[in-house]
Image (cartoon, rainbow, N blue to C red; front, side):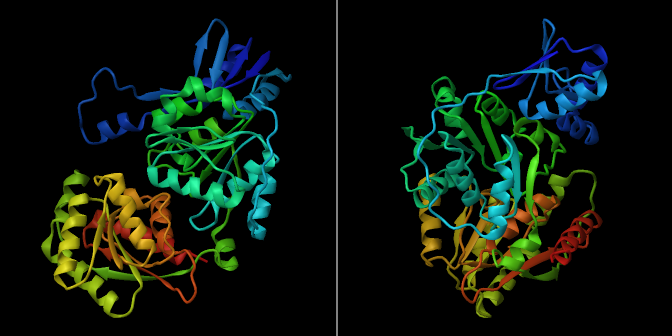
Length: 446
């Protein structure tokens, strides 16, 4: 047997039983198919019940290279022999990079473990300094590096951090920019359009918020690169669609996890105070979750309660207040109600032009915005503002990974700062269950 590793892994001359096991490992239930069946939607001919993340042709079995370590282990266990390794990964001449920062002890441990592996994922919560740790690893690898992101906010945040911690001008691919440098940050959509040009330029690929890798756009881009090294970063390696294992298959195993207690003990993040508000919202759940949430966000009494609670928090001396919702229209409704209480409020959603979003975020950083109403999708990743200390969760969150990210927006430490989370529990059985899940999450915090 021979295992060739480049932008993907290819196994040649594998026996039938081994191939059967590899196919089994690399085949997953299709979450879209399962969801369609659950809600009685039309499936059609193009929606397969399973997703196969491998290809076979002329005796060659091709699969994501992050799974290569598992494949080698299975070769040994099932055939008694190891495959001959043909390493075709791209290694470029070393570059002169120096990390110009200071790592906390837990960050130094994480970097040391990451540097032991060519492929791997770092799982570390919001406020842990994932970007700083990644830049320390990039500097130690001394390879031209591409950092892959999926939003403009992350794009510019990485560019600023590269300048601050590596003292080099970053290359930038995205938002109308097309420059390359020893360390380049790229928006995935823009990188996708320039793969032929970019692939030969890098020996290290870093994927921020790598729990998004299983999305087809990310897998297409990640698998194009044959870098010697790859690094995945995420606050959570769990996905709502259940395709968690694909993160490992494309980027390698989770090498290190920064536990929340390390963050609390080191002062990297704050412990939030958790307050529950019970609403009077009632509605029959008839199998359509989106319809239920639509009724919830348009319930006037519930929205008035939230607006009054925000006003009370502001009057009690809360600093920066973040009001988070899943719906754009709900954000605007809440902002209007809060403004009627005589409070200044800004709205931040993905439907706004990037320039307006940047201006609002700049105002927030400068202390010119006290109350921000924003969609959870926009603030869930790469949104950084230490001035926020109070969070209102106005629509239910069922996925723990997402909850971690949204709550993390107010946990960045600052002198004299405390953090408070306001949660809303609705007396509807389905919503009550998700509320209890959130409550357990906060009670379990060390």
